[in-house]
Length: 271
Image 1: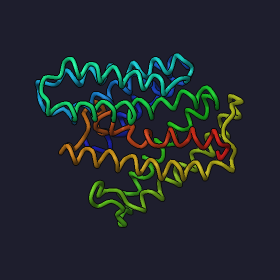
Image 2: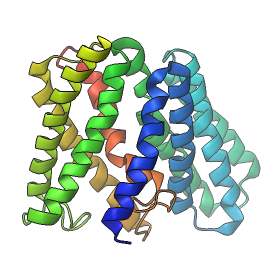
Image 3: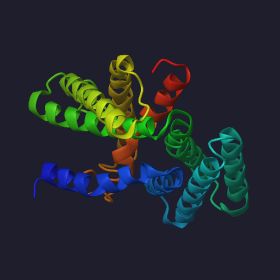
């Protein structure tokens, strides 16, 4: 079976379940917790080289999920407080249990990066959902999906102008343009459909080109950043949990950049 066909089949199986989790805030917390569990495990696994220190992966994953649960059920309040508590907890654990001195710095960096990059960034779905509605939260997710899809197929067919030969040689300017147009067309249809069927509040039509540009830029940089991490750790994929897509971190790398930026722009009325 071709990789493209495998990607499509996996997407059709997983996507309906993910979308259904936006029906309620509690199910969204569960979804984000599950995704963070898998993605943080992959990131920490890449950065932990010694089998003797595999327990650091589990500690890091627990701290990531704990942050998501605490932040989610606090109604997206006191995020910095919970992030600080998780860091302090990780520091105490390291001081007590880490036996190999050379592992201290890597363990600290891995834990901090996973807390901020994975749990922290993805948790911005909570304030988007609570302050701007489920429809805008779901649009943030699905627009990234459509951007990735458009960029992937247009890039394969027409991609010639490479934008990051060092870290992500398959990324092309033509793919970004195709992804932008796919995202914009989808966002317009999404707004019209969800406002008509559910009377949902979605960002104005005038904001959709800006939103699509934000998705295009930050999804691309998020993907390239994760590619840089994988190249540093000499990994092709972050994992194998999603056939055709690689690992969970591979699937959400762009979303980790898009979600916080979308929340900021919504907060300041730019979207």
